[in-house]
Length: 115
Image (cartoon, rainbow, N blue to C red; front, top):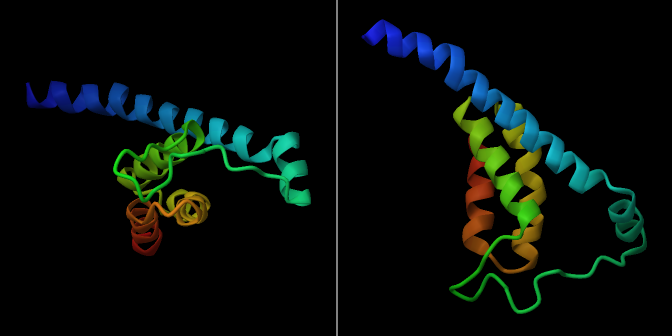
């Protein structure tokens, strides 16, 4: 039974998680490398998409791109892919500091220091 579970984990679970990391990396790359994002960041036209949802309030929620990036960072850290963790942890760190979500910024900084 123990060997069967080990075999199943090696063949299916690890491959599933690797595919998940790959999908998350592609989604994050699309978000960061879009033509619209590059153009607006060069001109300084990026507007905050949060509105009233800032980090100082108890009901703070991450937007979709931040959530995908955090999932990628956490999953890469679990798989001991420290290069991916370190490279991607700097992006939400800046965003979280900007909207005063210091709890989330602290966890990104901690992951960056650990990797």
